[in-house]
Length: 168
Image 1 (cartoon, rainbow, N blue to C red):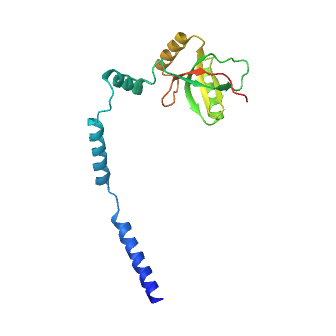
Image 2: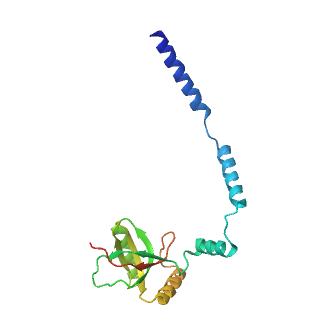
Image 3: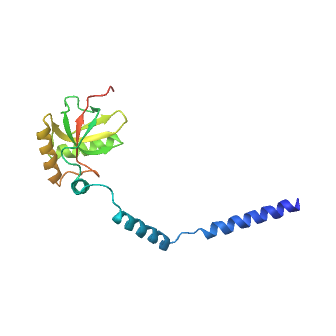
């Protein structure tokens, strides 16, 4: 019994010592951050200059007009709207209320073709509009990027190709 108590006290003391010895400091974080930055700056990612430049442009300006996500969605609310084949998405929400609010603000700003598309996994995309012709939709995507009145989400606007409608 006496040995068990002594052993448990020694175990607790060892745990306390080990816990107090592993404290991280700002200096440790900074050193790790600087080492990671140095490694990233000198690492050869295997990309040619053209691909690297395209990735940098995409990071600064959003996806190129040629990149299109394909999504199954159903138009919510107004059943009079038929979604074009290529849509310009300005944001994505998990809450339908937020998507409808943004869509309403876009419609009040003069974007009459704005609508909300709901995917099967309960994501709500706010679409600015679109067109069945890819080139016209690309032009719309490009011009929408220049419009400062549109509150884009991070990584938006993007072109979404309607893959059809899922069953509600």
